[in-house]
Length: 344
Image (cartoon, rainbow, N blue to C red; front, side):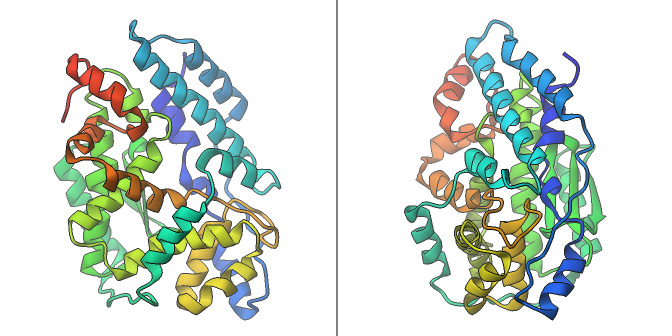
């Protein structure tokens, strides 16, 4: 085999591939006329999807040092990355939403009700933002340096989120022009460094790279664990609750509405900027946002939080062996007991 599973995951499961490169221009057009539906364009893939499919096929055939359980984890992740390839290749096409729902699901009545509960406190209120992007980047870099060597932080003008980490590349991006309150910087340290980076760092110290590349379904667990950590650290404030709940509602609306209609549905509950940001996150991946559909990934934050909350403290500690899903806890516990994987 050529590329490692970790490298393939870093290339394919890269959320920045869904960020519209023309979002600032389309934002101006939209606020000039809020009946306008943006037309998003995206950066190139930067890899050959045919070649990566061939690489992944090899992982489906490979064994892992005779341990069938680990082999199944590797093969499960390879199959999931095939679905990621379907998704990123479908950007801008009518098939995009189908592949997104296949990979991440869509909001059901239970999840929507939980989102409404988070939103029941009324409109979001954001505290004053006194920390510029560069200072936030510096503080995040300091936190990463404490975790281990080799991590980089950069300012990126193409991000939709305020910050995004790619642990496989050991790279954390902060959105150019973003500003933060001290609490929001703490949230980022807890979320991006204390969860995403930490699980990746621990996974690197395990005998199989699947603990770095991630097991199938790990992302729901990871995002849920990250928000759970925000709760435990006392920084899951009302504004953050509005973000997490609002993302689920935005996806629900996006599956049947145009961009302009989603924005109009969100506006009574959010300010202009927040309603726009939520709508962009839900409609990204599409080219013509007058069409229903979009990226459903953001439901994982709340769904994962609810699942992680339901776990015992004993079970949660096994989630730190690397980038694993709570669905795989039985096998993780087995191989930890056998000394093949370490609790860190």
